[in-house]
Image (cartoon, rainbow over all chains, first blue to last red):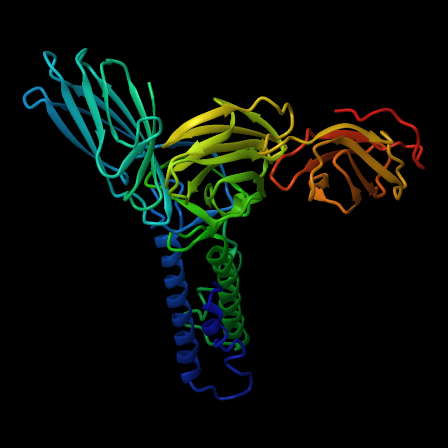
Length: 192
Length: 304
């Protein structure tokens, strides 16, 4: 987009006042008016740059616009950590917001004397037609069986078309989940 | 970069006209108006540059291959390249179209050829989803990737899928596709698989693998326009040849011979030669060096 400042600045009469003539003072006012209009346009354009320009010193929200043809260097992904407990109910429901982070670390305080279930629901996937991918780093602390479920139409590679997997495992269970249709279908892999 | 507007605007005489003095010349008014006008021109030029080249969160931005670094991603999404239903054979995947590629397939042979990788010394990765559109309980696929491919994980060529389901692959390179790594992510319904045992440096593909035993003459004349014969096996009907990743015209072909006329190349040029069959198989890539003496000769076999 080209600047339109010169549309007004070109209206400044640089030959005013004219030598050897009585000059109407309107010429001054016209020039001052053109100067003011040019400043207004300059201000507006600067505001656009200041409001919409990416800032190196701030978080930038691209509003789902596309950035393309870029080499990424030295970048990271936002992590959200939390601890959930199902000590009293033996069932924990955890909502993970894609827009908050793409790496979710979840420590699970399970029922130490029995089995427990942790059910994850991922909300705010990218829009249909966009590929979104997130990781869940789940760490149950129980030596009893913990069942981890990915709610929704989730399918985990190697786990017979179901998002619910039971573990008897105290180490970290690592999910990579992705969707291309706003979470209507969720695919995933599990590493542990 | 600092603005240069003040270089001009600072010359505006802000003390003109002077109090208590008569104006001796209107030229000083004109001079000031002219400097104001020139300041605006400079300002407009700089504003245009910013408006055109500054990243704006309200627009799509093409970085022209430049680097952005030192940032944390939050709530990203990635463009999908959905090719829809594709036919048996070589399927081209354009890296520029997205990092997630989806193809709807039926039983058969497929070789995927990823094109337009980004820059060298940059890690580029795509995820490929193959969606089986058949509802049959057993659909057999032979999957391969063209190029110099290293398979990680469990490299299977033949896979069997049950019903409408998908299988996923990650494919990446760090040298603009010169060497590829392929990692099968897995399927949601693999009922059986057989391990791909052929291959080596070349890409594995579906169907019988073409082999190259020799290229005659082994060292080509730099002046080109000489008959070259590729001797090997499994050159089925429709087999074609690519040199430096460009398909060339071949004159005759049999299950064991393909001939073509070479093009001129600078002496010492190293080129790659690869044979593709229509069911997707690829041969081992063979490199040979043009004979700097030109005119063709009785060179040895191809060097890899």
